[in-house]
Amino acid sequence: MMVFNFTRYVQWPDQAASGEFVIGVVGSNEIYKTLTDWYGGKPRGSKTYVIKKFNSASEITDCHVLYIDKNKSGEFDAANAKVKGKGTLVITDKNGLGEKGSGINFKTVDNKLKFELNQKAIEASNLKVSGSLSSMAILI
Image (cartoon, helix red, strand yellow):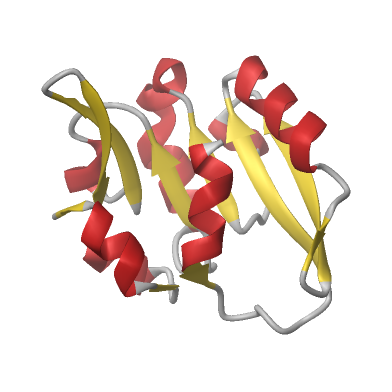
């Protein structure tokens, strides 16, 4: 659910265009199924949510959001290189990947789930993040 909620606070370069708003998932069948059940085919402004499942970095095609499950974090470099500069918000779930170039990285702090926001990675992806999202994040 948090993966989806981030889309409310980010502006993409093609925001006004119509078509598909693609969320890609590398790894987790559970997250893919949840996103598909809850949001697949639903409208997002003039776009429609499409959820795609990728088994590895080599399968990744263009998407607006790319979630890389912690079990597939070894493919982070290849996945990140594939979407670099294409207006993709990369979200990860493993310590250290925020510093490595993930736009948003989940992190447990004092037994609470928090998230890091890598401002340089966001800017390099030509994305804009609202101040309210930045204020909730651990900025790196």
